[in-house]
Length: 310
Image (cartoon, rainbow, N blue to C red; front, top):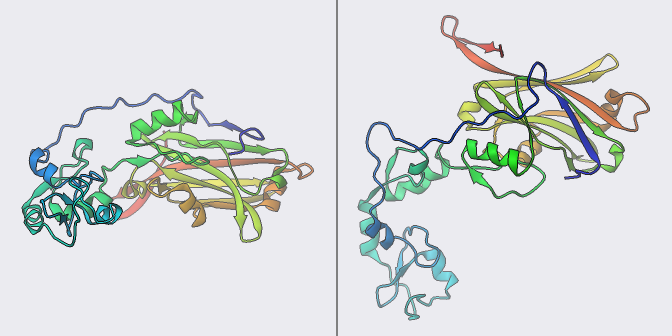
């Protein structure tokens, strides 16, 4: 990210400029049926000694009965990592049968998932589990941090020094002294606390085909199903012209590059952005006005009605 040459000045309507207070992380207490952790002895039997992941068919074993998963069998060049005997093509059918009879909690049970699945169904569920950790939404660096939303909010504020604001409307200004030098750039992320949820505002410059463009879009810090409860608008304009975008924020489950490459946001061609900046059109001074609202179901009419911030 070109942090030295890109200035971002923001103001948010009717709100405190200080960082928002963060919710305290609370320990999870499952409701309803009790969730039992996997039995240690059986779980250890099904753990590959090389990668330590759970093993799924085909489970291989050497002549001495040491087991490992099919992926690691190729990595160890057909030699048992425990006794160094040749592995051959012996399947551990007994262990596969034991695994077939097991029902285990989702591996995210400590994060709140109450579900229990047959051993061979766990992987499918865990890939889409709503309780699985989120990746850091920060753009402009390959950050490997993962965690729940309260953790990521603290991480963004303390480690990435992201601007935190409270409010559902904003008035954000993006500045660049020589925008023609910028072909691919990411401005500093901004996070908004609105309706008890967090939203990430992104602004980027990139090449769309042969044309240099700017793009602004919003991502929701939560799952896609929750994101559908909200809508947002982005607006840029000057000199009697205006561009307006309205849409549903994408979940941070979708990486910022995936959202950008799908063009799901307000896209402004560079010449138009410079026109909106006024003056001699040599510097970018683009003001983005935005609003977030919650779609509220009207039970009488059967339609969604927008709910605005009070």
